[in-house]
Length: 108
Ligand SMILES: [Zn+2]
Image 1: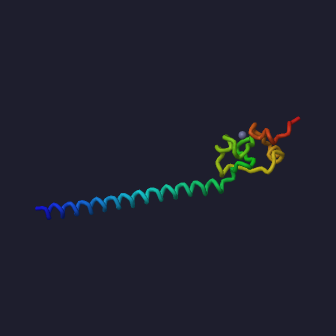
Image 2: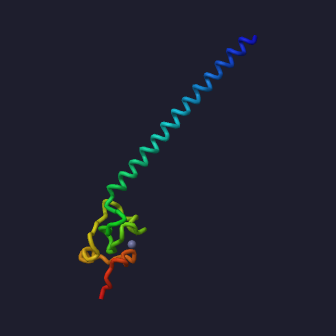
Image 3: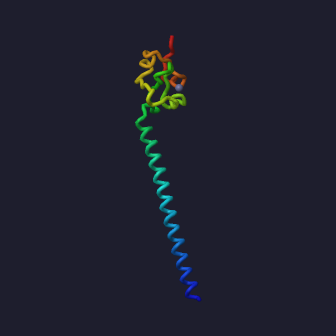
């Protein structure tokens, strides 16, 4: 009687441990998937032409922005055009957004 109960107890302990290990593996797999997703996101960001330091504009827009501007963040990377100066952005027919006012010369 006691031996039977002991055996059952040991069996159940092993089953619980097995389940815990199985759950841990599942959790690790989920976390690895999330890490992969975040790494992909970071790679896309690193290769985006819209970087905080750049002057950017959408090919479809007449306004140029600092890459860190909220409007610049809405520009699709495939539509982005990067300028090395406000003068070059103006030469392409674009006006600087107020986010570039620290760089812009007054247009007289
Ligand atoms: Zn802007």
